[in-house]
Length: 389
Ligand code: APR
Ligand code: PHB
Image 1 (tube, helix red, strand yellow):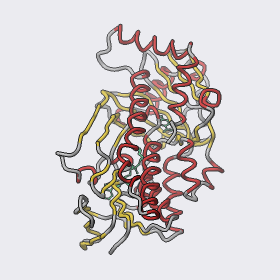
Image 2: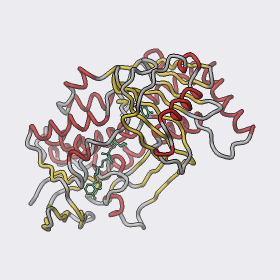
Image 3: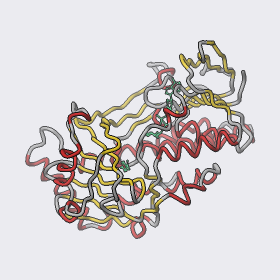
Image 4: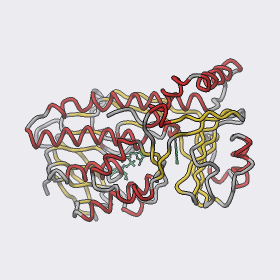
């Protein structure tokens, strides 16, 4: 089999790239390790920057998003009982849209299938060959049969645990990592959100986040121990801890209910450079990971896809490889800004084991400065709604 761009990974990065290229007449094949049902079973954050919303509309998958997405003009940062509202409209002249990431992926699958996009599910043993030469190819197994896909370019959209990043030789790759000494215990509950905007809560008891999927489906998180397991936390224990960490005014109106999903996510900052090796280009979690505190995972993958899709279109349409040659540097420039913001939000709002009284007062002072300084609020707002592509 032959295609123009072989895309490894059928998550949001791979699907959005495939759709954007298809609409410009560029042929792709997506190789996905799991089944579609498995990919759509993942519960992931749902805060979309304006850049991603625009790309989804450009990709022809903005209809349901426009109907069901919830625009948010601000968010609340709280510290014990103090609340700071960050006004995106006033401070960043933009907003974000709350729309489940699973729904983004569902919409993208639907669009690819409508255009007869080529997606091969349940592939195994994917290997990238000759990425540093002019005729790369990918081999893989499907249903026990070996396959070969010849292509012009390979897009590694296969997430943190994929094969693409590791195809780049150790002697070429530079990796940067910070693993945080705690996790996020998250639940979904069929209850009305405690507030119409997200609440990022820091408190003497630790961090919590109040989010939502829609007006009848809430998503809550509490910072938990690095070795905690979901089964260690009863629903009652979760709700009690959440109430301790959010401002009293919200704790008193919180509507609780049985969790319909409960999971723990580790927190990590990670970047692998470069994001290109020969004709292999990395996108999204294959190249970088952020702690969820800034809601930057999908949104940073989206800017990678923007840069790579534009570069590939220019290469095919204009026989101009300048975008491809600049891709890694261009993408990484925005990636590192997202890493910084996500690290800053995480450092500001979480309790770190071993923090001493001075460390706690530094966090307190940072929050006090944010509360008193509109420029500090503008910096947070502009990073949260998304820096320009
Ligand atoms: N071969 C084929 N597919 C693979 C392989 C492999 N060896 N390894 C992983 N995959 C698939 C996974 O099954 C997954 O569907 O690649 C896909 C990668 O998707 P994500 O991990 O979601 O990464 P990405 O598409 O970059 O998403 C960016 O959105 O999904 C969220 O939180 C996620 O921040 C991330 C963002
Ligand atoms: C979520 O709704 O799951 C969510 C929202 C914002 C974040 C992280 C997760 O920063």
